Each structure stands twice: as C-alpha cells, then as structure tokens.
Amino acid sequence: MASISSLGIGSGLKLADILDSLTTAEKAQLTPISKQQTSYTAKLSAYGTLNSSLAAFQTANTALNNADLFTATSTASSTTAFSATTTGSAIAGKYTISVSQLAQAQTLTTKNTRADNTTAIASADSTITFTAGNGKPPVSIGISAANSSLTGIRDAINKAEAGVSASIINVGNGQYRLSITSTNTGSANAVSIGVSGDSALQSFMGYNGTNTDASNGMSESVTAQNAKLKVNNVDIENSSNTISDALEDITLNLNDVTSGNQTLTISKDTSKASTTIKAWVDAYNTLQDSFAALTKYTAVDVGSTQDANNGALLGDSTLRTIQTQLKTMLSTSVGGTAYKTLSQVGITSDPSTGKLQLDNTKLQTALTNNSQAVKDLVVGDGKTTGITTNMATHMTDWLSSKGIIQTAKDGVSKTLNKLTDQYNAVSDRIDATVAQYKAQFTQLDIMMTSLNNTSSYLTQQFDTSSSSK
Image (cartoon, rainbow, N blue to C red):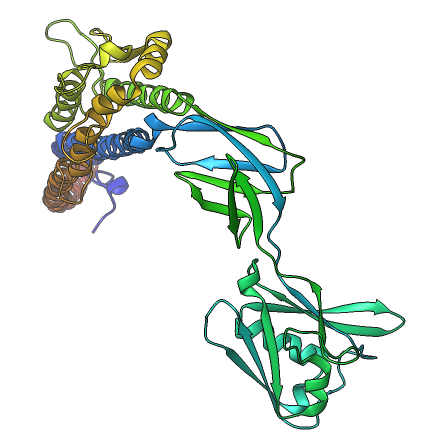
C-alpha cells in the first residue's frame, strides 16, 4: 500500500492532505476523553494531598490528645548531686534531700596476674558458677581447658549474660588481670564465684565473698553498696542511683553525695501544654490552607470556560464532609467543665478563612488558673469526650483503608480505568477508519493514474494522426 506522503502523486489529487484532515477530524473524538482523564488524574493526586495533609494534622492532634500535658511539672535542684524527672501526676512542692552514699556495682579483680591473654590457665575442663545475693538462680558457664585463657574466659562470660561483665586489665610490665563487674548496682547484686573441674582456675579466680586467701582468687576492688539518702529527713536505701519508688510520680537521679541538705522543687509547668496547643493550631491552619488550594475557584464571565487552575477538588463532597465535620467539632460546646468552648481558652475561628486564631495571654491564664478544666475541654476522658479525642476518632475513620478518602480514590481509579478502555476502543476504531480511508484513496489514486495515462496516450495518438494528414 502506498505511503501517505505518496498519495496523489500519480493522480495529481491532494489525497495526502485530505487524508490528514480526515485523520485530524477523527482523532478529535479522543479530546474529550483525554480531558476527562487529565481531570480525574488530577483528582486522584488531590486525594493523595488531602490524605497527607489530614495525616499531618492527625499527628499534631495525637500530640495534644495527652492528659499528662495538663498536669506537667518541672523540676529544679539546688545541687548537681541529684536531679529529678516527673510524670504528669506529680504534686508541686519542695523536698529536702541529702545523699550520703551512692549505689555501686561490685567489681572483682584477680589477685594474681598473667603474662599474656592467650595461654590456657586450666589443664582440665571447668565450670564457673556465678551466684548473686538477689535470689536469682546461679548461672554456670562451661570452660574447656583449651579455651581457659584470659581472652577465652572473658568472651565466655560476656556471652553468657550471667549478670556480670568481664574485661582484661593491662597493669603494665606485660602483666594482665581479669576484672568482673556486676551488671547492676546494689549490695544484693554482689556475686560469689565458684570454679569446679580445675584447681588452677579455682585458685586464679574463685571468690567466696570473704577475701580470706591473701594470695589467690579474686578481691573486691569495688564494693557493692546501696544508695543512702534522706528525703524530708526520712531514711531511704535503694540498690540503684535511679530511685522511682521513694516519691510518688517523681524519679530521683543521684549523681553524687551532698554536703548537707539540698532542695528539690517541683513546679507546675504550663509550657508543654501551651506549646503543644500552638502547634495544634498551626497544624489546623496548614490543613485549612490545603483545603483552600484543593477547592480554589476563580470566577469567570457567563459563558466563558472555567479556569484550568481551579482546585481539583472544587465542589468535592468528600473534602466538604471532612471540612464541615472538623468545623462542627471545634465549635461544639462541651458540658461538665469550667470551660465549655475553645473560645474561652483563647482559641477562636476566623469565619472568612476557617483558620484558628490563638490568644496566648488568654490561654496562659486558663492553664494557670484551671489546667484540669482545659484538659477536660481538649482531651476529655480520652475515650468519648474531648475535642481532640473526638477528632482522633473521626480522623482514624477518614484515613483508614475503608475510609471516605480511600473510597473516593477507589471510585476515581475505577473511572480512570473505564476511560482508558474507552480511549483505547475509540483509538482503535479511528485507526481502522483511517486505514479504510487510506485504502480507498490508494485505489482512487491508482484509478486516476490509469485514467490520466490513458488520456495522455489517446491525446498523443490524436495529435500524431492529425499531423500525418
């Protein structure tokens, strides 16, 4: 079949141009389908943006939906010898504290040294047993004679998780000692070490807790001991330097002994709540900016084509549902608390933009005067009441795999698939029609070429006949 560019050469007709025009006219049928594909693709992308924007606000809402924010406290110590951390339920007040002794972990060190790390100590397979005074079952570790060097013993102990760690100390002059330290501080975590199977290894590292042999075994280079302190003149002893059970909802962290009495001050801290509320307001406003971009509308004259830059979700029911329900949750009055609306704690809504405005002074006053009431308004019981609790429930539903956003995305994807099938079917039909046109034009070109050739021949014959007369 002749190429398009060669159509009409023989006949002199502009068949190629005619075929191009017909092809363009046929392909115009694809334009409305392409426009729909572009529109729905933009809509699918816009739902992704909506999902991400809502998830970002959900993160800020989750952070605010925390009752401990509204009972938070800060700590101040008059010394670096101790510090403290609190939970949300700690009571503000002052405590007098003196620390007379820090908790220590026991460290045992061999009395005898070895000239290297790799030579075996034992001539027979042995068992090393660690027994702690804390009531936990003894831990036994098998040591083969071949693996009884300082390095072998150290590695075997550290792999066994026996409540101790082992290390090798280079004491100089090419001499080494084995050191064993309890994992936990406190006198109850001190260990005794029994060795069976080889007398040389027993003499080198056995320890029964008494130090009776001046030349063999291990000695206590650091004695296990408990922390000792007074809180408001009450004696306290603890195996750890981190003490969480002496003062309710307060954890003491001991760093050093004190010189006499020192003071720990627990104060009410409203900064955590106010900072988190501000972040929540900012996140909500960012979400509103996203809503505005997705529903952007540019007015045009009657009869004119709509602006192509309009938001992909302009007039979309899914976005409108989310936006309306969020607005309703913000404005709902909450009963059973001193503060029933967000406006009472300094959070108001701009009716023209939907964005929130925060009065920091009013919020600070509310948190200082009645942080519990602010918590009741914002968080509620954390299950069914409270603005952020209610929002959390709705956003979890909206963003779920069966939520309204995913349902909308699924609907658009289904439509796009149908449009793709429709586009392919129309495109195939156009290709077939154009192919038919081309075949017909090719036949016409052949026929016209033949007629033209015949006409030229007859004309030539007539001219010859006339000239011979």
